[in-house]
Length: 294
Image 1 (cartoon, one colour):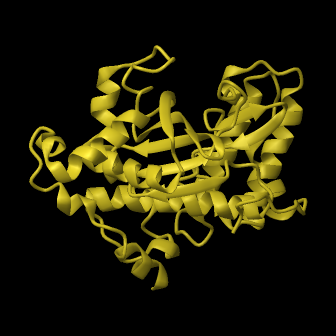
Image 2 (cartoon, helix red, strand yellow; image 1 turned 180 degrees about the vertical axis):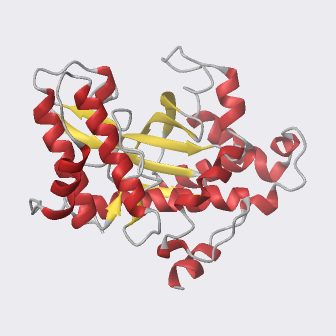
């Protein structure tokens, strides 16, 4: 109940934008200064910075008026200074390299007009943390952001290396940037000297997530695992559900199956059933909590 009250207190920028027509709002005196401030922070994504990647279609797809207003709020707080270039693109969201008063961050902006979110409701329905909330598309996107933020915090509390969540508002999530000058590569994009050792670590992560966090990732694969200095980082945790979810065990088997398929493509012969027993029954290591856990 407390969560919902806090949610309802957030400024309703969507209401402000109901009468918007083709960015006419930008010229209104009450928004002109706001847009100028946002525009300055978006020099990179508008092709005016030092990164020559700009794609106008990306800007039009991602930075609608409501998103720009949300970004402005986060800029006012100092959580974002500039947004520079995309480091990941998907059906549901774009992730950008950005700067803040604390250094580099990753800014994940969820698409507010993408109908794909309707198919993701199954990862919210059944999760006791989000029962009874609106299923309107824009609200579903906002709930999804909150869900990813809370899942990251829960995983870090149990010592799992997931990006530290920093802030969120509406459809924008700010996280720790995983990488050096460039984003760290995904597991699918690297060649490993000892893939089986990595596989064992991945099984441990699934087991800790299930037994200690009471979560299942629900999309665990080589696409959502980053490697940084031989450390494994788990990303894209928005669809993760608690083990009380009615489909939690189905999602767990699917996660295990995917990494078994990955390791078997490396020339091994691992059985899903053996891995499932390990995840469910074997003791898991106790890791120290990481900053930002909850």
